[in-house]
Image (tube, rainbow over all chains, first blue to last red; front, side, top):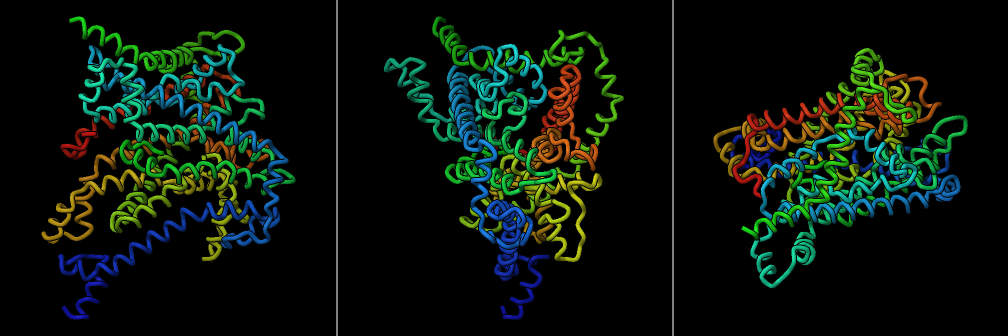
Length: 302
Length: 303
């Protein structure tokens, strides 16, 4: 092949491919093309974050100034102190953590417990019952919103954080499904051997099933932590006392108070947004492969 | 004969949490919600039977019509755009190798880790008609951007634009599916003289049809339930709610207002049941049509 051939193939490459030979020739150009697309898309996805963090570190009258300058000028870290003074942001952070960990820990443990029941035992009605698990996976939470509120109201627990996580002690269809699939991959003789050695069913669950399903448990935990951290509607419904707010609920209160009106305090809104977002980004980087694996294998929107 | 029976009893011990939850938090509330939808209930007086009154009211409520219209229009805009863009990203990701693909995938997913309330806040700023980054960017090309957050005609397009920042999960699912397409198939098509477009249409897309179908359904169901971002941006603040009227009124927002702001629990339940019926139909279509249209690999659901 001559150099001219190469060039001709390269020019034609993104549009059409004549055959394996032309394909090899166009590869270099096409790589550049693909990387350019990926880099441009990355900029689109990342820059709003950059803007958010930068704007949160600028004085109020500069919030909208120089939107494409990727560092704060002038630098105003005191915005975070202002946010702290304006609202109990730190308590909200702690509340979100407590509720999130409670929600994630309970749902992970209970779902694993139930999943073990479905994966290990053979009993009449098993398929029908597992069908009920699958059926509820698609049930939109909105449908049961009102009666669920009435239950917590009847128990006198509205106005507390309990409704934000306590329902999780009964397991959740999606995680039961995930963990059962995982446990089905454990060879049965592992359990049978332990049975022969005199282990109880609880031992099988606690000493064998739980440790073996660690990756799936982590997926369930991080997904539920994220779901809980995102939740706005239930805190809106159940919490009245600002001291009990979670971060999303608190941020909503801050937006309502400071975004509009005669004297907007944008720097407080932006600083509180960063505080709401950052912890999850950290969790994501720590548990990244579990998120990706969880979404790719189960298809759940993360 | 004794051992299986004991095992059955033990099985139910393990299933007990689920069974309780199923009755108390799923089946029970489902039925309760249906019953409540035939009543007027304000949380103070006990429910009063209203027959089909709530459903008749829904049919005539202009706000329901507006909320349904907005929600459907949003869904019909978001879903195709999101799928096409995510598919394009996944296809490109599939062409670069190893580490780089992982890094880009992480970047694409990052917006999905932003709590929806924060997304709503962020886009209030980005879409700000006077000085927001989006309009400043358009200004670089001499385009005068619209008042995304206050002009009733531009509120919904702004929301769609915001929704497209969140393509991470869809891209990951499609990318995972693309990686499972055997290389020999596309290579064979290439040797037969199929161009990239033909290879995409005749080989790649059919091979990932189950994943494609899945993300269409999931994105549709999620879109129909849109609440957090929209509520953050456009509701709950009296001052904010003037100029754009009901342009941002989504179905679940209206349901929430009826149930928990006006305490029309019966009416909210009726609204919830309509949504449930629609989602149930979509899910059924998924199961039925999916089975017929979609090409399944033999060993796909092994684990």
